[in-house]
Amino acid sequence: MRPFIHVNCAMSADGKIAGEDRSQVRISSEEDKARVKTLRSKYDAILVGVGTVVADDPHLTVKGCDYDTNPIRVVLDPHGRTPDDAQVLDDRAPTVMVTLEGCDREWDCEETIRAGKDEIDLAKVMETLAEDIGIEGILVEGGGFTISTFFKAGMVDRYTVFVGGLVIGGSGSPTPCDGDGWVSEGGIGLELRGCEVLGNGALLTFEPRRRSPSRRLQHELVIVAVLPERLPGGHLV
Ligand SMILES: NC(=O)c1ccc[n+]([C@@H]2O[C@H](COP(=O)([O-])OP(=O)(O)OC[C@H]3O[C@@H](n4cnc5c(N)ncnc54)[C@H](OP(=O)(O)O)[C@@H]3O)[C@@H](O)[C@H]2O)c1
Image (cartoon, rainbow, N blue to C red; front, side, top):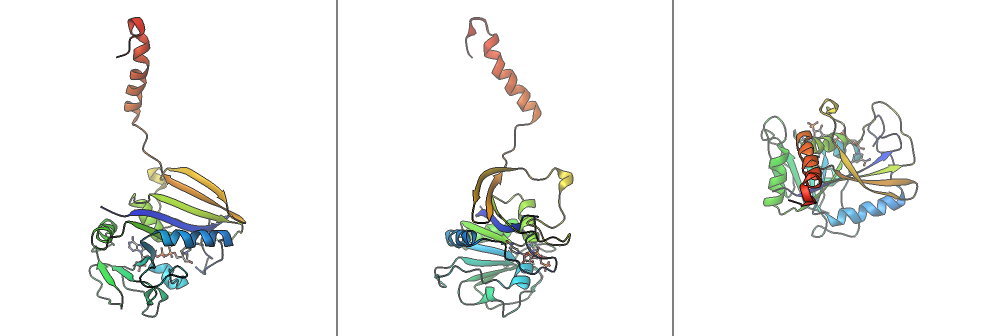
């Protein structure tokens, strides 16, 4: 069992989520910021990778909520790079750190999950979050590498991306889905579920495309569909 996984991020009109030096860029409109605030409060947990913690030092809390009412913060940090004074470790919300089994770094936090020898075992982490901590829904907020590992693992149930009215540029600027890529495997098909103007930008909502039947199965379905018309007397079977 794993939680429902919703990936949310904001990108520029040229598909970047930050500057080439990984500096934070204001992409969301005021309307999108308000949406994200509501969205965060609907999920049991908010997850980011350590790259985002190091680059942005986010607190990942909801304004007006406290330790007991904020979503749990989860950081994927295989090698223990999160600084002790990172805002994500403050007392405004519980925090779960996730490292490799061989990492012995400790933090002053609610819990540390150590899963995977060479790379983080994402399936095991999600199972632990669901079954041991009771997390039913998780909001993955970035960055590009972290999001790519969820797409690659086939673990994205909803993907929302706000496309803001600015161009950031730079071939090295991070995008919503970085990492190694998998174009040779045909990419990952998504169904567009919604498109909404939010100030000077648009929010796109996607869900994973359900696999269409194989060619052979499609052929058989066509035969079944035409068969009744060919029966004498037009009787259906
Ligand atoms: N516009 C937006 O909505 C938005 C949101 C968030 C972040 N950002 C931007 O995104 C940039 C950061 O993105 P990023 O891709 O560099 O960093 P990231 O995805 O936040 O973190 C990547 C690092 O986290 C660890 N990690 C994450 N998932 C892992 C997994 N499944 N298995 C193993 N390790 C995992 C690895 O750490 P190690 O390197 O230690 O192995 C990896 O290098 C920043 O510039 C930030 O401003 C933008």
